[in-house]
Length: 488
Image (cartoon, rainbow, N blue to C red):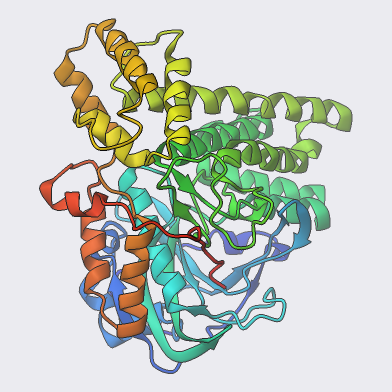
């Protein structure tokens, strides 16, 4: 155990005060030679941590899972989940929650080591992770944060000095993940399946206290909990769709109560707009395709709602009615959030009943002409409508006239609309081919400069700077679609 507090760790492990069925206390699984690869210095500072101390041997021992700071206990959380629609028992099979950091402003964040070794929930796995997937999560989660999408974040990645055996030999690594909490839909599913109603109530009360304290004293707090989770998911998934993000593995254990994006496995961003886009090698039926994500979230919310029925009403059928009514709010909320975001992307301040059809017609044309999603909106923002099949088509010319007329039916100036579009349409996203180039340099040649340059460009995606232009180029045409893999 690391003595002293020079690094600024300030833990208060409230989750460890829940009933024992929720977790298992575990000791660190030491690694041979932890080496710091990347540290998120700005995040460290916001957490109240001394970034210079984290870079020392003592700090790296903690980030590598060899030591736990004084005053805390490591634990692995238990949960279940529907994976591709099938219910199963799960849990932190390769993660160690070392504590809840209380920041100087009083905020609480989980600090979790991912890839830290075996736990009682490992189900035969080694509990370790490869460098490539950990760096991938670092890049994508930080890009999502910069894009304004609620997300867990990455504090650091260290290599372990030990190989990880998968299909090939990989460099072992551990990522330090920062989250508002790791309470998942699957956490509730686990307790509803194997716990008591009292333990379910303990979990719900804990979730409310941690994430929704304003409803803590309300007599209908469990119904309000469900409604708040619905609201946050409706906002989150709208943001995913607006930036073209495909999560890839939207199992219920990968959905958080807090409304943060979590578990960046086979995720990626769309280039060509296609609602059927799937990147994950294991999603052969397209369950988690880009266009299917809102429907899947509704399905996942229904599974979460089912766990709360015993708390909603003493009569199960009445509780089910309340749950169903709350779930039905998701679709309308999601659609409203998405359409508001799309209005921003088109520079529209007010509401017109024709807006949804205007948006859908543009998206359909983009799909028909295999247009790039991000660059199409960027071109509209700067009125650079050249050199693409889409912009040269007669149907786009007609749409463009309708759009200009729509802009004319609002009081705001052209300059205001353009600024709204700049603030709503990123210049850069973590393009899949750019991420792969950065990861190849890091993993194969220990050259981290490419990744660092990419991260620098992604820090302010709405800047539309000259330096970012090089990162807007599309990949060379390939005969095979881009494919991602779970980072296990």
